Length: 207
Image (tube, rainbow, N blue to C red):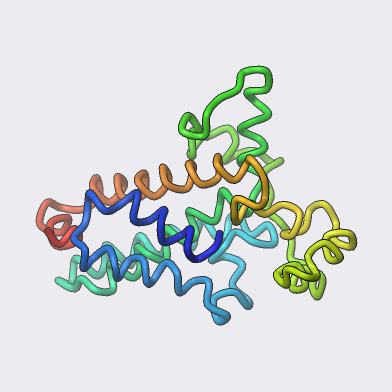
């Protein structure tokens, strides 16, 4: 998703749970994943190129860094790791076919984006779940507005260009991807609430 959207989703999901200081560090780490350095050669940051298992492991690794940091009395690295974690979790809904799979189960029963389940187990485990592939150079041209239409004509249907739900311009399914990403961010915070001791959680939320 666009950096501005990652920021607003993270604020929406976490502002009631963390201090402003913690939230700003988490947001900065989240958005940094979309720097040029984070975009090249790091499919696991964004669930690109069908890196489903690799991205899942990355989320688990970052969660481990949060725990390790707090066990050693640190705090800054815990916020950074959590920001990285939720960036990947948020991108899952914009870069995979999870949203279309969820909607296909409810054909004939229109549901609002707020009703989406971001962790429906049968979809998460489905062999049909996949993410957009990066086809260079056409997928790079996609990000140039003047060349977007041209690139889409040449890109396969399983490309990032065709599959992404990174912004409202991608159509009505973006609203479902955004709602799922906000819920998933809250879900990931809920996991920390269960894993951390009261002292560790108090230091993490910084309130």
